Length: 238
Ligand code: GLU
Image (cartoon, rainbow, N blue to C red; front, top):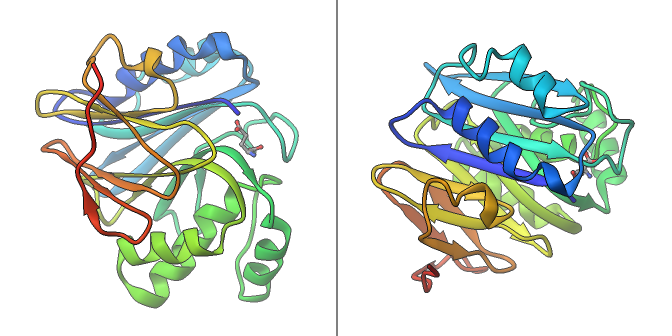
């Protein structure tokens, strides 16, 4: 289980994501990646090995302009450590990008069902199932929040998830079960991370997510929902 960082605000996202990931390097990882949204398009960059490879490849993040994004350092459990299997994993239609810590236990069955329905997979990861399921549900229901709920209801296993959708470019969506994930509050910018050390340079005002909760993070604020998708207020930690 490795590192997740997410950012929505007024500043360039990529350098913030890369810096946040560098704070999580101590946990160990085998590859890294970021996704930044710009003009409704999800731009992804990934690199095998050290984070420095990703920093060099993206020119310190300058090659991925935009003010919203997610980043990941991966510790492979399903599929060898290479660029294709690194996160973010993107749906076939390019609409959803996902970073994931944990293991989707029933991914093989979900993958077979999606292949039967016409999906083409490009990685060996369990995580790609999340991205493809989101895109499939979204095509059926036309609503991102509903698609996330439909996807989550099918997952078995452990997850901390950061999700972005090209059609809702003002938000990062977060969900967790049996894997740490927390929300960071800033001034006209908000954050997501799997470990508080990734955020300390930007904010010390955080909320720890609990199992089954879902959060929608925008620059203006964060909405949190309980397991039954009722909006809730949670205690902040400093
Ligand atoms: N199970 C996922 C994979 O192998 C996530 C691994 C992690 O937690 O870094 O891609």
